[in-house]
Image (tube, rainbow, N blue to C red; front, side):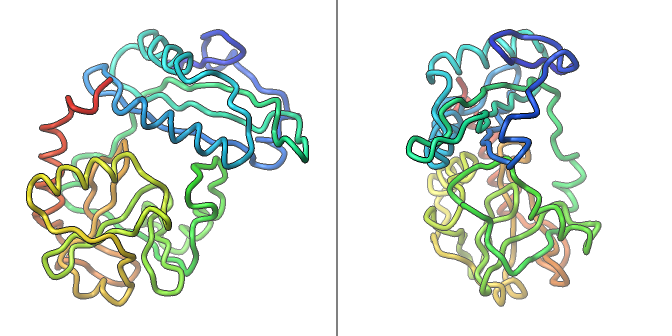
Length: 275
């Protein structure tokens, strides 16, 4: 059962609703986060909610609920849900756009639902991405509007996400940050070009502690053919190897040791980020 928090109460999803006048429906205006649990404990709750607040602020959406209250709502919702799962808090544009003040009557709701993690087969065999010559709109904002990232996937049914490669520069995929391993170095796009992923930061943290060489720049599309590994990171998918980007096979079509080692390190260090 999916639990939902809306209008100040917890209820079953089927009993919750939003008015059709909300600008989330009418104009796709809203922001969200996804926060998973491990053994019932929330992963990086504070960084996720700080990014939610930042996304809202950049969209000129007023913060409808104080940060500490959001934390308490999410903790209580996960307790009611029970078991392993994820919380997805949303802030919508509400019904009002004040040209001077922005979206002044936002709505806040949260889904508490089962965790839909990639199967272990994906870590053993790797996944595919579909490259597009475009950038993710408003890269510093985690917006609810993903239409532009879904449409191109019809061209490659095996791809799980699009990979943004505007002008030959690899930035990020539609739901994840991206890393290339080339010439023995981990390369990932800088924060001024991509969404500041919580998993991106944790991956870099364990990589630096383990002595990996890293570089923050946009990898180039023409480096894909000669890189040894490519992987994406996200709160639910953790560190997921990529073995194909478009028509380019990476690492002989098999996941490499770097992504596997980093995922082990991440899982061994979960306690430092739990809340």
